[in-house]
Structures are given as structure tokens and as C-alpha cells.
Image 1 (cartoon, one colour):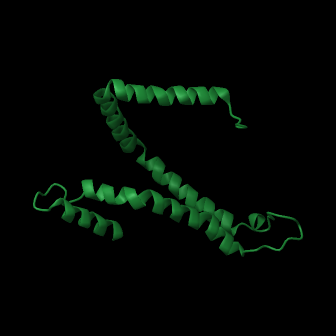
Image 2: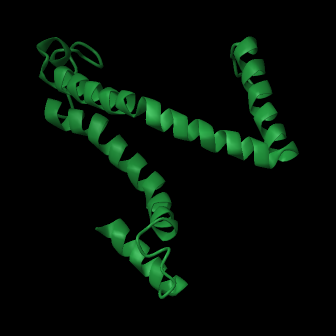
Image 3: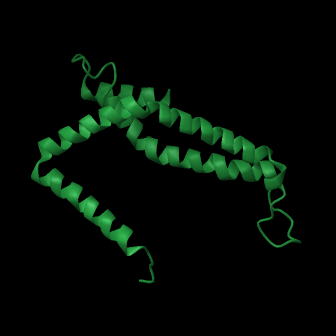
Length: 141
């Protein structure tokens, strides 16, 4: 196929992936119980790391945008005139990709999240269609 890769990394990754799949098939209760407990521990122990990494990323983007060294970097031949301004290029690189990823990922995931976990989900006086509409309203808000 013309693909190259590190055979050790590929084999270890495949064994770990298939091991998790087999564990979920053989002992689903134990596997999903351990997965839920691991998620609880990770989110309670490392939420600060996630927030700090996002702050570092924002400051890194601002540094790149304001640094003259990167502003004079050419991505083509020496005599080529830039097709877009620096500000336009910056927003295309860092703005559009994030918005597109968010729309594709959260476009489906967020309404489903609000359908299953919202303040109306535990109340039995709403029908499924009403809860679905409320989930869409929460998503759009």
C-alpha cells in the first residue's frame, strides 16, 4: 500500500485496541464499571490540567500572532506575494479549523447529551418529543 510506520508502535496499538474490545465483549460489566471509575478519577484529578492546557494554547496562539519573527516567515518562493493578509491567514488557520471541528462533533453530540442529561429528563410529565425539542432548544441557546 505504500504506507510506512513503526512496526512496534503499530503492533502495540493493535494489541491494546483489540485487548480492550475483547475485554468489553468477555466481561462487559467489569469493563464498563472500570471505565466509569477511571473516568471519574481522571476528571476529578486532572480537570486543572485540561483548563491549564487550554490557557497555554490561547497564549501560544497570541504569541504566534504578535511575534514579528513568525510574521516574516515565507511559505513559498522568495518573490511570491502573499495571497492573504496575516490576519486573514491567522483566522483561517486557527479559527476555521476549530469551528468546523466543533460543528461536526458537537452538532450531533450536544443534542443527544441534552436529551439524556438535562433538567427535564428526570421529569415524567414531558413526552419524548417534548424532551427532544427541549434538547434542541438548549443546543441552540
